[in-house]
Image 1 (cartoon, rainbow, N blue to C red):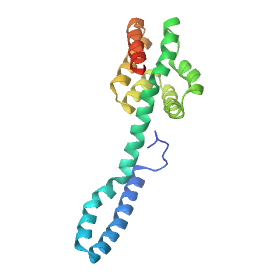
Image 2: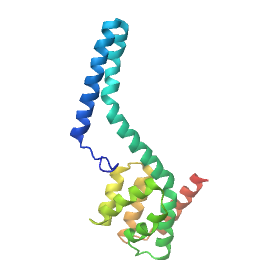
Image 3: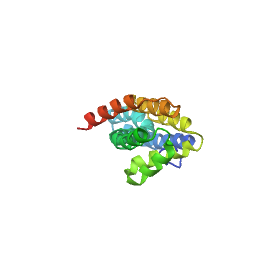
Image 4: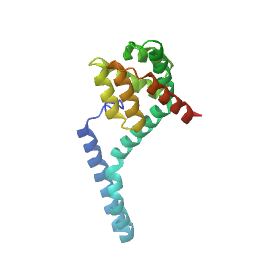
Length: 169
């Protein structure tokens, strides 16, 4: 919820579920008095209404993850070019230079990464992995993590760069 900038807590979401479902059940009872068939159909829809707030959040998370994956090649190009020139560049410095040109969703996600970098670059990569557990993100974080540990993996980074470029074209 924090990632999406939603002010509600999990308890608030649960209260919304109860409120929506309760209101819908009142409607179903009214429908049942009109027609038994409408009432039965209404009761079948109660589960959908119960899951509505959670499904809306899941949809927002999926859209945000998809946007990040689409824009990953732009971010990776910047990081790759910096590491190709200078292997000791700080990840936070590279990301903060990229943020002004990033899309809105990418900027929001990278601001979370920057917040996490305050606790360490390794920690930020672990958090990114947990927020977006997609194979490309996992590989991205592994490569950047290896680079932060001093592993000279420019060849591996170049292969990943070419893969991303090929996937984009």
